[in-house]
Length: 391
Image 1: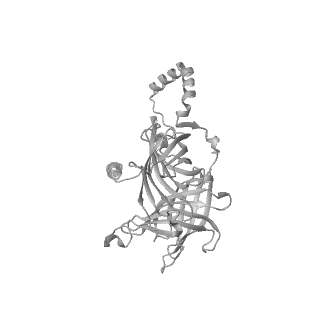
Image 2: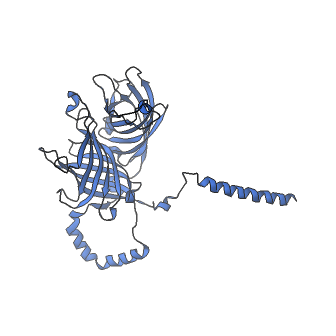
Image 3: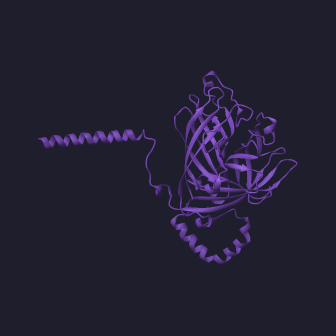
């Protein structure tokens, strides 16, 4: 009798559990997957070369200034706070009539008080061959007067899902009379291999390659200059083993006085409902990073970029910035940050989405904690602890 009751209870419970799980499944927004289920088998390193046309003049410019910040004579030379939106063509060669391989869509803004240093936030949208429709996302610092500038690749779509890497930019030509520029880009990207061929197609392809090998080699020699991508070994760039590093420094957000380093460049039109959070306001920063909390402490770098109020109901900032280091072996290297900063929380965490120099192919996170806040003038000192995986 007890056994029969036990079986009945088990059956009822099983039916209830299955029903519960089916109902619960529809309310879930996350699940675990195997990497192979998305084709994530092995990373490869690819090199892309193309030319970026920054056309600011004439009747059909592709780079348009959308914000011209109010500035003092001190910052007039760098245009600190100006924002330009771009939809620039990317071509296989430096001529504007050369074959189009994609477009650079996004924005660049002057994020340095004392030099021509741009914050670049853009997507390379490719239209060439198998990469047609795939994109690479760039977020980095562009000191335009330097011969070579390095910016991180922070992600991608299509054939560049889960990608990371860096781009090297070199000015090819600059027209002093109208401001137009052509910039050579070399992009080095770690991304997963995706096969576009079915098993049968692979077999046919292999036979075709065997038949036309001699002709193919001859052809490739002639068209090598017209290619915009190639495969590389990871060791060729020194990518051997990752290490985890911890950095600690203090971020000085100086909004008051004659030497402010955080300047509001856009004050959005708002209703009483959003007035408390400043929703839509944009502030450009070139904030010092120091070894200690005192403003006179040793400088280890600068935080260049912008933050904007992106929450209607709380003090939640979108942070888009580069840590530009000037200390020791890290001098000239950068880390790129893009994340959410709920400033009233005790600890705020934001992703490290890439880097340059010694931080090529990096990833990690930064934790921010307010050290001091001056209620009378709005100045703040924030302690940052940054954890970075890099080669």
